[in-house]
Structure formats: structure tokens, C-alpha cells
Image (cartoon, rainbow, N blue to C red):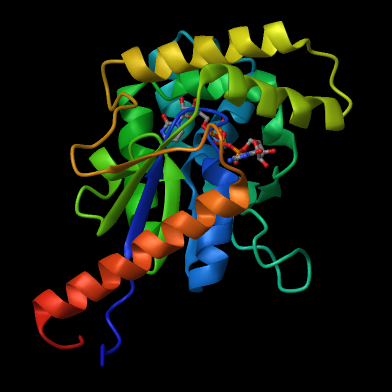
Length: 244
Ligand code: CDP
Ligand code: CDP
């Protein structure tokens, strides 16, 4: 029989609307792992830049702002939300969980995320947060830069039209007034910035499993990834010969 293998580090990367957050939360809840949303960190810094009126094109100012900022991700308090709820996000001690979820903050996040000094600070924070394993972290560069040795890497994707439609539905439910075409344009714009930036662009790691969930729902996608995680654990147990 297979023994207990140390918990895995699971990296999930992919473009906006590919389902990273919903799927990663579910996978983490099933496996009893810690869920960490790296994008929330870029969003928190973006919110601070917008509130402070710091020009997003002024890289030096954005980098100094990042250096004097405290960003913290916490799992939701027990009983406060379902087991697969997202992280609570604190910016300099203030709960900004809801405020960072606007389209404006998302666009600004993809701009502050191009600054080298910002990336090195946030990557270090992410590496510390996931250092003990037993973690599902999602973002753009988790499998390539943050945890290049992650035991399981997933590159989650879906067609731009389906991703924009998912985001548009979310926006409608929140009372937003954007049209589907406007949302598609925003999604394409952010895709371009994330894929074409010089530093840590969004790219599939060579050892990542490509999961295209254009025609799959959240539950099916999560089930597939949990299965891949179980297989990986078995494989590691076999190759190590015994539990660790
Ligand atoms: O984190 P990311 O931007 O990659 O996507 P998300 O926020 O997890 O998903 C965006 C929306 O698409 C959510 O409302 C999900 O429930 C939905 N979704 C879906 O309908 N089918 C999927 N296979 C994945 C996500
Ligand atoms: O949920 P969604 O996919 O819309 O975006 P997010 O994961 O909250 O990330 C917001 C932005 O932060 C992205 O468009 C990226 O520019 C940036 N980001 C990044 O550069 N690296 C990460 N590991 C995560 C996010």
C-alpha cells in the first residue's frame, strides 16, 4: 500500500477568466491544502497606486510604493465562508478583499506587474507563503518563476470568447454595465500585456499539463486536477520507494 507522501506544491497558471481562482479554491479544499491567489497581491498594490494617484507609468514611484506596502493573504475565518472561499486580502492592515475585484484594478494590476522591483518583492512574498508545501497557488508565473520545482503544474486555458463571457456574466451579476464586446476587449488587452511583457510573461512551463476548459465547468476541471494530483503523489511515492 502507498504511504503518506509529503504534500505537493501545485502551480496553476493561465490567462484571465480561465477559471484559475474557482478551480484552485476547489482543488485546495478537496486536498486540504492552502489556497493562495498571487494575483490578489498585484491587485492590492494596484489599488494602492490608484488611491494614491501614483502614475502607473512611473516605474520608480511604483517600486518605492511597493517597498513601503504590506500585503497579506489570509484564509477566510472558519464559518465566515465556505471551505472553498477565496483569500482575505489585507493592504497595510486594511481589508481590501472586495475592493480589488473591479475591472479598473485588474487593468492597473497588469501594469504594476510589469515593474521588475514589484515582481521581485511579490515573488519573494509568494515563495515564503508557500514554502511549506501543501499549497495550490495560482497566477501567471507560478510554474515558471515562483515555484519552478512544483510537483504539479497546470496551465489552464479557454478560448478568449468564453473567458470574456465568464467575466461578463460575473460583471452582470455584480450590477456592472459593460457589454460583452467591451469585456472581450479588456480581456484581450490584459492577455497581450501579460503574454508580451519582458519579465515573467504568461507562458506555459515546458512541464505543465495543458488543461483547456473551454467546454468544461468548474467542477469537472477541479476533478481532473485532483486526479492528476493523486496520480502525481502515487508516482512520487513509487519513485521515492517509501513515504517521507
Ligand atoms: O481566476 P480566473 O480569472 O482564471 O477565473 P475565475 O475567476 O476562476 O473564473 C471566472 C468565472 O468563470 C467564474 O464565475 C467561474 O465560475 C467561471 N468558470 C466557468 O464557468 N467554467 C469554468 N470551467 C471555469 C470558470
Ligand atoms: O483573476 P484574473 O486572472 O483576472 O487576474 P489576477 O490573477 O487577479 O491577476 C491580475 C493581474 O496581475 C494579471 O493580469 C497579471 O498582470 C498580474 N499577475 C502577475 O503578473 N503574476 C501573477 N503571478 C499573478 C498576477
